[in-house]
Image (tube, rainbow, N blue to C red; front, top):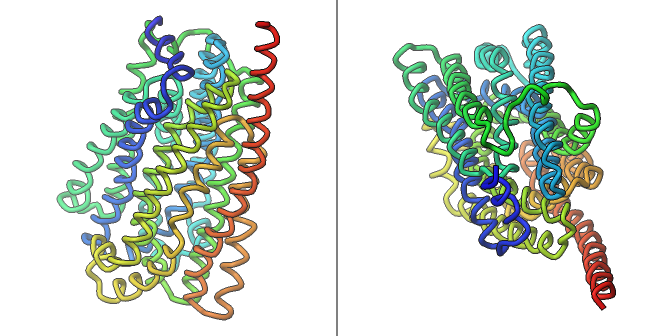
Length: 462
C-alpha cells in the first residue's frame, strides 16, 4: 500500500515530461497493440475471405463501437474519478469506485447483449448492410455480442489500472490480449475455415485471457485498490458522478456510430458496397495512429486529473501542452503518409484492383487536414480528465453531430461520392478551430485561479 501511495503522489511532484513519458508510453504501446485487433482482423479477412467480407466488417464496426461506448460510459468516468479521488487522498472512495466499475459493466453489457442479439439483422441493415454483406456482418457480431461482458470489464479495468498508478500492468493486459488474438486469428480463419466468425471468436477469447490477468492484480490485498466485500454495493453518488464524467466519451462514441451509419448509407448510395470497403480500409490506416493519440490522452488523464484535484493548475496546463504537441506530430505523420504513399497503405489490406483504385484517391481527400485532429482529440480528453463533462460533450459533439452529419448529407449533392469523402476533412478543420477557442478561454481562467492561489498562500505566510 505504501508503494502504491508513493507512486500516486509523484503525479503532483515529478517533472511533467518524465511523468507523461512514464504514463503515456505504456498506454501508447497498449493502444497501438489494441489497434491490432482491428488491423489483424481486417488483413486476414481482406486477404482470406474477400472485399465483401471487409465491407461487412465495416458495417459491423459501428455496432461494435456502440457496445464499446457503453463500456466507456463506465470505464472512462470511473478512471477519471479514481484519479481525482487519489489526488484528494480519498482512498476509500477510490476503492469503492473499483467495485462499481465491475457491477455497472455487468448490468450494461447484459442489456446491450440481449437487445443486440434480438434485433441484430435489422440493426445491421440500418447500418448499411446489403444482401451481399449482411451475412458477413451477422456472423462477426454474434460472438462479439455473446462475449460483450468481457469487453466491458476488460476496458473498464484497464482504465482503472492506469488511473491507479499501474500503466505498465494495463499495457501488459493489452499485449496479452493482442498476442492471443494474433495467434488465434489465422487458426480460426484459415485452418478451421471459420471465416469472419473465427476472427470474432479469437477476439473474445483473447479478451477473456486479459481479464484473468487483470483480476490477479486487483485480487492482491497489498494493492491500494483491490477487491473486497464492501466495494460491490452500488454507491449512487459514485455511479452518478462516474456516468456524468463518462457521458462525454459515451456520447462521442455514440455520435461517431451515428455518423458512420450515415456515411455507410451515403457511401452505399453514391459508390456501392465497394465504397464502404474503401472507407473501412482508410479507417484501419488512421486507426493505428488515432490509438497512439489516445495512448497519449490516457497518459495525460491521471496526471491532469490528479493535479486538478490538487489545484496545481500550472502542472495541469503543462501536461496538456506537451500532450497536444506530441499528438500533433503523430497526426501530421498520418497526413504525410496519406498524401504521399496511399497505395502502399491500401495494399496492406487488399490486392483487389477495384478496391485499391477507389481507396487511394479517397484516402488523399480524407486525410488532407488530418494534422489538426491530434489537437482536437487531446483538448476533448483534457476536459474529460478534469471532470468538465459539459465542455467535453459539446466539443465532441461539435465535430460529429453539428458538422460532420450536415456536411455528409449536403456535400454529396454537389460532388457525389467525393462529397462524402470531403465531409470528413471539413469537419476536422472546423472542430479544431472550435476546440482552440474553448481551450483559450479555460486556460486563461485556470491561470487566474493559479495566480490567486499563489497570492493567498503568500499572504498567509507573511
